[in-house]
Image 1 (tube, rainbow, N blue to C red):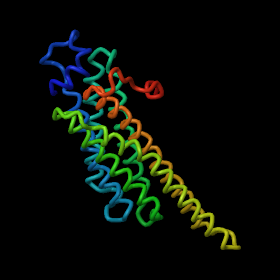
Image 2: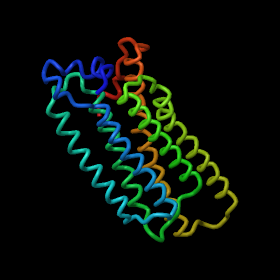
Image 3: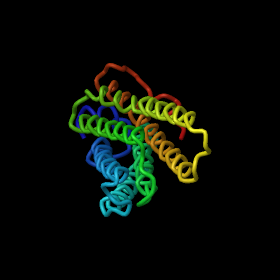
Image 4: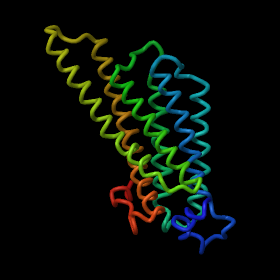
Length: 238
């Protein structure tokens, strides 16, 4: 871990562990984020019909997610909990986002409904948010403190998804108004599937936005711009 990161983030646990035993938290989180970047690419291909829901790539990444989860939990649980809230909450948020991405890929059944243009655009927003987070974590792991713009991009993903979902709902309502007959079972099934897909994507964006808030706090603390900036209380209880 860089000297800047140690002085601001890990300093609180050094009285309890030796310097040589201090985990490289930012590199650990960067590694987790890189896995999710790859996972988002595979899930996007599944949604577009370019990759199977039983893809070996998806299975490998699911196993990788479980491996990192076990490793990170073992590290965090072995250290004093005081002062590690941001580390723990970031790892947990990223893990939940990964689990939701896997569920999204698995729920896209072969031969079933295909996502609409709004859902694909929402997935692009999520991919960009994950890539922004990973870029920010990589900056911190390499000693840079300029990660605030990456954090802002991730935070904005949640409102961007709301925009695309509302646009799709307005188009759907307009289309329904033009049809006098009752919707078919196929149409109802597709609407139900799309609703579930939207819910998953909304939940993923919420986790990424929360991780972005923490990243922004870190960036401000490490650069000295935020003084004694603290994590919002809403993120302390999960």
